[in-house]
Amino acid sequence: MKEISKRNVSVIKDTNGHNIVVINDILFKGKQSIKWNDVEEYLRRYVGEFYTIAESKEIIYIGTDLPDEYAHSEYTNILKGANAKAKANAAQGIPELVETATEKRFTPNSKNKHKKDAKYGWYRYESRFALPVLSNEGEVERYNVFHVAMIIRHAEDNKKYLYDVMNIKKEMSSLFQS
Image (cartoon, rainbow, N blue to C red; front, side, top):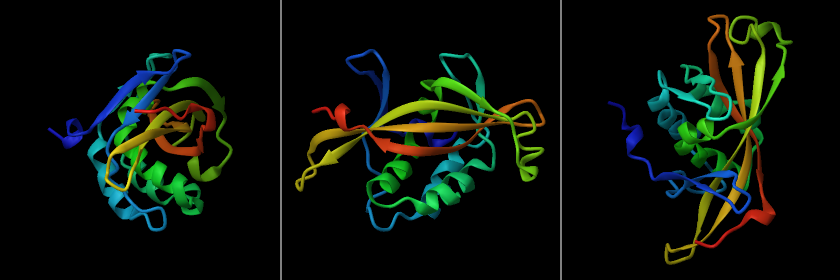
């Protein structure tokens, strides 16, 4: 059994009834220098697992390419500050982020390099998560809520795989007290 069960993650509903994946532990600290190789190693625990999106009932697999793509993609390489820290720590909530994903959109594959791994195109889902903001004493002051796009590739084997988490944006109006 993988160590996936040793996570401090829950799903709550906001005042509008929308899901928020609450990630209670900050495993990857430091806004200036996230150790992305550690994030990649953490993500390897999910490889071979699969999760069902509640809204669409689609099964999403976690392939061997996710850890490297998530930690070292062009998008990840441009992240700085709070968004880099948010993406790194969002790795803890991958199962719940997939399960609570909404707003499915399809895009055909247009790149030759993805002709097998995304032969049947790409899907984009939206999801949300929250991370604690800690005081100097280590107490939770509040939670910051982030919106993300879950990028899913529809492969030649006709399975859908999580490819990356992108477009991380802090929701200014959704900060809530613990």
